[in-house]
Length: 119
Image (cartoon, rainbow, N blue to C red; front, side):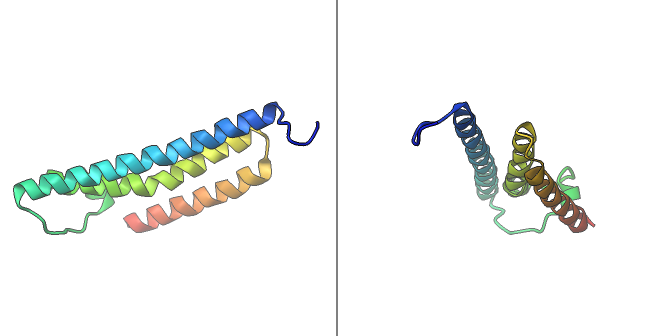
């Protein structure tokens, strides 16, 4: 193929890049939106103290603002992990097993860190 001309794979790669970019943008927007909502709820109630929140205690009875802010931080933390999951699927579709294996190791490390932090 002459230089400068893109084949059908280039179009799919561009779509994949936009999908990964969109995933990161949506994760960022959700995380920031939840944290901002939590801050506004806390400010409205006059409770602007910072409390540590354990991942397992998110469903417990805690103030709404604190719960929203904690969910926002969780969403921001899960955003890069969702990118890795998406890349595993995209590379698997392309049968690029080396990258799938490396991304799988990254996911395993992220999962181990999550479970280590919960305990």
